[in-house]
Structures are given as structure tokens and as C-alpha cells.
Image (cartoon, rainbow, N blue to C red; front, side):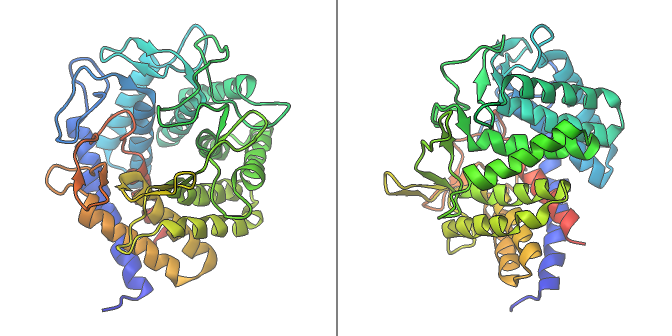
Length: 398
């Protein structure tokens, strides 16, 4: 039986609240706190086994802080605030480089600096998390720390001559030979991914600290996406660039496409410029739609140079599909987008959610089997994409 838009929305909002409060948050609250060494464990494998000696990554810890801060703002569960406070305390004690400024990339399980490079992607996530922790608590200290990180990014990473942001530096802010976030990335000086999350971080910071220089740089970032990163012909994002903005990638990332569509709209809206990007936002969403599978999920990526389509369904890609398609529906009024958002959410709950042990699996493989080889929680598997999806659904569906 075909459901009306109102029925779809009611089911989605109820499902989002249930997913957040009964499946996602409890997993991180009960499984991840490291009571022996402080903070949170660095890894839980795909079979729910804690790896006690795993390094503790900056991205994981920043995203934990953001997730519990944001969830507390919406749900007002005091237990969420307690987890956010735990994350903030650990980050302040261990991740901040008090000598050279900025934050470390990762720590040992015991909390000592392990990789001390200044990855700008990581600093952006700390700005994002600290901004939301400030909103959750009203405490001025996290806002001050976020502003300090903003100033460091602008001082060291912003390319005054050619525009955009450079990827990474060593502990003392010197140029690095290896700039990559991970081994699968291209070793280039500018990337879509870092720009995307600076965009997200600056949007959150601007909402609570509407300073003129920040506004200028956020507006500039919106233009960078429109003029440099979004391919004018295809609508897809271009992923890797040299210093002069020459594209160095042939990969189409459907998850990043749909994620960028709504984050770009969010940034422009914060600036009061949402009308200027509406066409671009819907063009990116339409490009991401090319990766839609018959079952309502979104494929991972396509490599045009190799002629290869990666048909795996990663957890974060499905999360972004829900929000991006929902945003496209709100912008266009076309109910087709709402149906796509609902279909992606149903796929998540039927296939990716671990209803026995909690949280989500990393992915469903192309052959339909559950991927238990990759982590349930870890350096990249964090309560960020799925928590953000739930909170966006709850905020958008009244």
C-alpha cells in the first residue's frame, strides 16, 4: 500500500528517535568508555570485541563529543551530557598541543601523543564539536578553544594566493610530504573532504560567533564549492586537487555528493544566502542519485578511470542519503525525493542496524552479506553520521 507523505514523515520521525535513543547512543555509552585508561576505547571490531590497546584517534573523539552534545540539545537526556563532559575533559587533557597549538592526530591507548601531525580535517572536527558543546553547556571555554583553532587554520592552512586550504602540517606547522587522511586517498595538497568539513565546522561556529572574518571565510568556502569543487557538467564533486586547483582524481563518491548537497545548503542558509545555491544543491543531489540501487540504498563510489563501480553499501553513505534526499524534497517540493529518503532509511533499519548488539554494521557487501571484517567503532567508525541523520530527521520533520 502506498503511503502518503504525512505517513512517511510520521514513520521516519518516530524511527529516528527510536534509532537514536535505543540503538546508537546506548551502544556508545555502555561499550566505549575506557574506565581503566580514561576517555573512550580506540576500537571495537566487527564482532563487538573491544581492542583495549588500540590508538585513540582525534576524529573518533571529536565526533563522540559532537554526537553527545548535539543529542543532548535535542533529547535533553542528562546521560548524554555526562558523556559529552567525559569526552570534552579527555580531549582537553590529551589532544591539545600546548606547545605548538592545535591538536594531535592520534594518541596511544594510554593517552600519550602518537602521531603529532596537524591534519586540518581533524582541527575542523574539533571546532565543530567544541561549538556544539558550547551550545549544550553555555560554557565559554570550548567556544574560546574553537576560535583559537579557527585562527590557527586561517594562519597556517589558508592559501592566500590561490584560495582554499592546504591539507596537513607537522607538529611545528611545517609542510609534510605525506598529506593523506588515509592510505586510500591521493597525496594532494587540497581535497574536497577537508574543505567540506571546514565548511561544516565554520557554519556551526558562525551560528554562535558571527565574527566578520569568519563570515567572510565561510562565504568564500561556499563559493569554492560552487566554482571549484562541484563539476559544472556532471554535478558530482571533484575530490583531489593540486595547489593550483587542477583536479587529480577520477573517482565519484556518491556519499560525499549527497552529504555536500545539504551541508552546502546549510552553510549558505546560515549566511542568509540560501537562494544562491539552490540550483547547485539540487544538481549535486541529482548527481548522487545516479548511485541509487534498486533496493533504495546508495552505492559507495565509482572510478571512471578503471570503469569500476563499488556496490558496497557503507553505513555513512546511507545516513547521508537520508538527509540529502530529505533536504532536496524540502527545497524542491518534489515528493520523489521524500520517497527516496524514506527508502534509504528503511534500508538502514532492515539491513545495517544491528538489532541484537546495537549500533550499525560498517557495510553490506555487494553480495548482500554483512561486513564484520571492518570495525563497529574505531578511528573512522564513529557515532557521527548516524546520530546526525537522526537529529536532522527529528529537526526537519515536525
